[in-house]
Length: 252
Image (cartoon, rainbow, N blue to C red; front, top):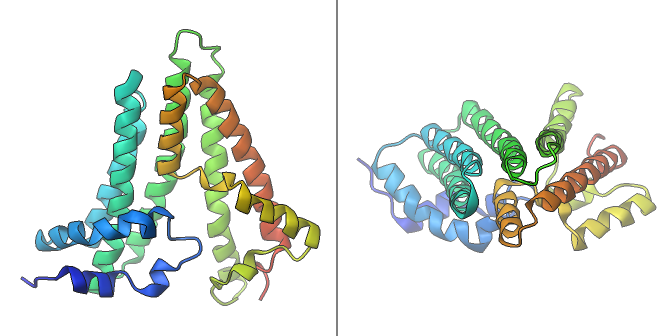
């Protein structure tokens, strides 16, 4: 059995082009996850797990984060926070393992997308159910949760739809250059730049959602927060769609 050092895992599993990805690399990666992940990756490699198996561990961790929200009170939100962190850690490890072992599998990418999309939708639905189960519920909270889940899924699917559209049009792979995503219209470009100061489009990952839900529980504003993030999701989806159609992402 091949033994991999932490140094080798970092050099092969965390190349510059991965760490500097504009969209695919979550902010928690360079901040702290990528500092922890090589140590878990080393253990997973020693256990002879495949990258795809670890991707499934990522999926199940995300689902557990969503399921945890169905537990009333403090325990539910704390468990959701923990499982969301674990999900992101496994998400770092599966890619590192694939690069170290040179096992690149389209199925792994598909499962990864499935894991993130399903987790974030399920967290939204579970949050709606959680709020609806409270004594002062109006009964609309479950609908808010379902609408939020749909909006989050739309927002994530838009990025994949760009790649699909370019592929069907026989265009080259989309560049990671930030300029590609900037709308050609100056007014729209300015409006998009405001999201750099108010990045509401970044709150719909499992980690951010679990943290927001925890804070809303802490201050007893879960029902209000559900409405706020649903509205934010609607604004984000419309803005994302306009930004894509007005940028160079769908051009050769």
